[in-house]
Length: 424
Ligand SMILES: [Zn+2]
Image (cartoon, rainbow, N blue to C red; front, side, top):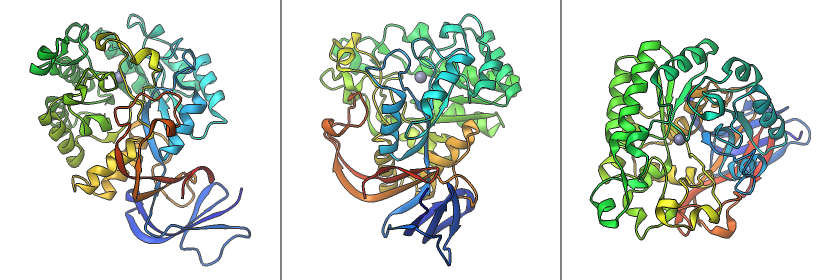
């Protein structure tokens, strides 16, 4: 593999307290040296003046749809979209068809991922077939390479089952990821519940549907002493609950997705199904609270909840359309908007999208420590582009951000010293 010298970039590595303009050498698939005095033979030198060199971005909440719905996305196409978005690693959710609930399924994903454009870390199901009634064989999945467990897409309604899942996962030192949703309250809803849903004649999902389960899973984390990771947080009260639990020493981490700090329920507009997701887009005050949560460390991670759907599932009546949007290719640009508006600084951005995701799931990566694998993302913070449907790398195009003028993107993605995406 050709050695690479990333020259004159702003190297930002919060784990090692680095924020400096310099040269980073990648050699033998590793971060070899900062400001080397000599170069190995045949080194490719890339001038990155004005750009940021950061540890490879990690998205810990991605749906790759394989096996079962390859017409929406595959491990290969999803990994290419990830690379184009600046990600060097993703964790994929188990609610595929069939569900990832056995060692064989985990192994199958890992085997397909070997040739993919990013590292893929499979998350196993908590319950058999994701049906919420009996625990899946978590030990066997952990041994096969599962990095966490969740029934994402479906809440675990049985609190005792969730408690046992946390205890088992704790034995293996991996977290349970909570899709926090009280299904009795949310079951028939398609958007945020409030005056707007009433006016539009759409059944709403109240904030409480999320908050009740956030509270339950914080309580279970305290009860068991085991790490729970709360997925796609969308409401103000959820942020408050997490903040309080953390202050009390509860072993919790939490993520939000770019749409929850970039859009409100108003995006549903004229019944736009690209703005339909679960949890639903919320209110202005929720968006403010999410931003505060990112700022003060209550929310540890930005994850896309990349959920590809074909036009078949989206071009339907609002209540019949599928939930979810793609996000791998817009996540970084939307997060950079938080930096430009002084909500967070550059260091925080790298923490939220690289070092904290690595920490939350115990994954390698997240720093440029010499000797670590050479997973690196180069960001051009000023690059302007219009996000257009025919340029989407993902196999599905369901994004409410199509047509948006965005500023800042990944221009070079490197996994293990190998370039997986280049747009310099
Ligand atoms: Zn979910």
